[in-house]
Amino acid sequence: QVHLVVSGGGLVQAGGSLRLSCAASGRIESDYVVAWFRQFPGKKREFVVGMVWSGDSTYSSDFVEGRFTISRDHAKNTVYLQMNGLVPEDSAVYYCAARSAGFQRSVHWYQYNYWGQGTQVTVSS
Image (cartoon, rainbow, N blue to C red; front, side, top):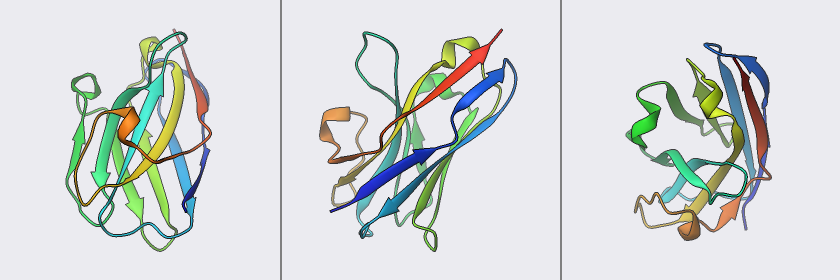
């Protein structure tokens, strides 16, 4: 069982940066995929960026455009989302997620087994 705890959201001005953290308790196996999603009011969760826990390559949605970066620290069992060049349209609740996936990437929220509690990111204009 994996438990994820998200931190680091808040209010930032347009053009600013935020880093979200997702600390995992329980064992994340090497073939797990970890990812960040976001959710707008009344909408389904939207994939942002992801990576295989044991790998280095990442995959992301088009809207990221190089602004957001996922990384992980094995020693701390933590996944990060570095967000730069934020715009008001990035305002949403952000979630981290993990799936026991056999290294298979996914952009679909329903294919993820474990979820953090979500954190609000608000970008002011």
